[in-house]
Amino acid sequence: MFQRIQTVYMSLSVILTGFLGYVFPLWTLDNGKPFYFAMDFKYLALSGAATAVVAMSLISFKNRKQQFVFNRLAMILNLILLGLLIYRSLNVSGETPAVSEKGIGMLLPIFSIVMLVLANKAIKKDEDLVKSVDRIR
Image (cartoon, rainbow, N blue to C red; front, side):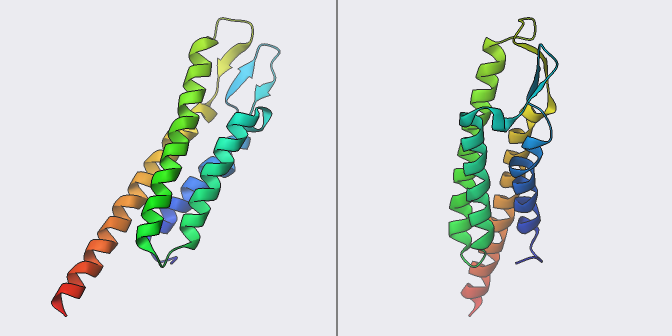
């Protein structure tokens, strides 16, 4: 499990969505206070669901097809989260009094999606290797 590269990619995705979203702010409000994922239920629920799905994928390391499906589901959840963040940032531009500065936290779903795509490529590579060995027998 730990010697496979997709485990590293999925672990980075868990760190990105599960922990760094609460360290790096999504944006800074006009009063100078940072806005994090946990301050709005929709963002909290989507990031928590994506983290839980990737964690389930990490646990199911013996079933590569199930891992592949879990990672795809996590990518969809991250895309929905990214869409909500972009919608919010476009509706509330930086010039309005509600949001004064956008933070790096808005990029975390993109980085997570990239890590999950790399993990799925590695899972597919492992699956192809197992199929080729079965063909030889």
